[in-house]
Structures are given as structure tokens and as C-alpha cells.
Image (tube, rainbow, N blue to C red; front, side, top):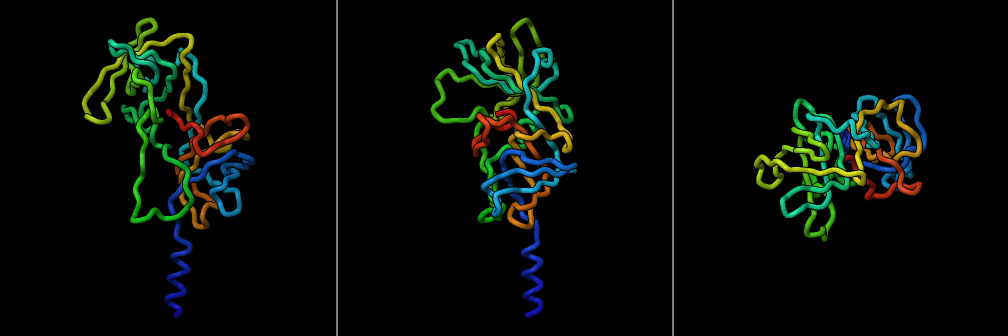
Length: 229
């Protein structure tokens, strides 16, 4: 009986991988607190001292340089040129594009083991159903800048073949950039998407990744914008 009780205690204390999201309401050192319906008591105290923390912020056009990683969405012409409505910029990791945009993805979930050992569902970049027929998307590294045209070299997500896409930018194109933030510098009234582990169903979380985005009309929702999305 004692062995069973000890085994149950160890199991109960084992960390579980999961995610929570919500507005940041307090910051103290490298720990911050969010309010979230995904925690049993309505809030999560997040230890972020060793986490990778990124923030999506408005970027000047000067940040759009050769070598930068970009994700562009907009309308595609018959010639295959994407007239960008929005471009997200990030720096390559070990010379490659990808991790900065997708590492912090996924939807919020409670800290419970995924059934059957789990797995992660992913949504195609650009998101959404019922896209317009001329929807255009480009992801990869900037290889050339010529006036208002950007050449993006990447890999097709389905065929895994190399692609080169021309992207045009205008005064209506929104530019944003993923930037690294220190835990102590996380601002209040910011939406935080946290991935990590917890031993108490999300009341306290040891974070591995934190993605910060602005509040939308003073609130954070389950579908708040993730970096690069």
C-alpha cells in the first residue's frame, strides 16, 4: 500500500507539457502572471527565466533586408507576384528560416496529457478557411530587394521543393517583426501565449516559449494572433 501511495504521489507531481494564454497582469523579476480560463484558479504564475520570449512589434521598412526571413500574405496576380498586405520579419536561426515563425504556434490547451500520446495539430500558414481564389503567400529568406519588389526564396510546404516568389510592397503593406524580449521587460496589458510544463494543471508554469502580442480591444482571445500568423 505504501508503495502504491508513493507511486501515486510521484505521478501527481510529474510535470505535464501544455500551454496557456491570457493577458499579463503582473511582472516580478523573471516571473509573470497571466489571467486565463485554462488554469483551475483562473490565473497562471509563469517562471520564464530560461524561456525563449518573442514579441511581435511594428517594424520599419529598413528592417526588410537581404538575408532576413519573411512571411508575406496578400493577393497573388496571374503572374504569381504576391501584393503583400502583411509581412512578418524575423532573423534566421543557424542560417535557416522557420523556427522564429512556427515554434510558438499551436492553440491553447489545459495541462492534461494528450490522449493516446498525442501529437500536435497544425494549421497551414496564412490560416483560415474560404480564402479568396487569388490568395498569395510567400515564406523564406529575402535574396534581393529592387525598389518595391522583394525576392523570397523558400521551400514549398507540401512538395518540399525550392520556390522563389516575387513580393510587391506598398504604402498599405503592414510590416511587423519578431523580437527577443527579456523576461523582466515583459510589459503589462500584453497577451502572452505560454508553452511549458506544470505540476499543478497550470497554476504555476515553467515556460519554454513565450509569444507576446498586443491586446485586441483590451482583451486576449483563444484565437489571438501568434507571431508570424
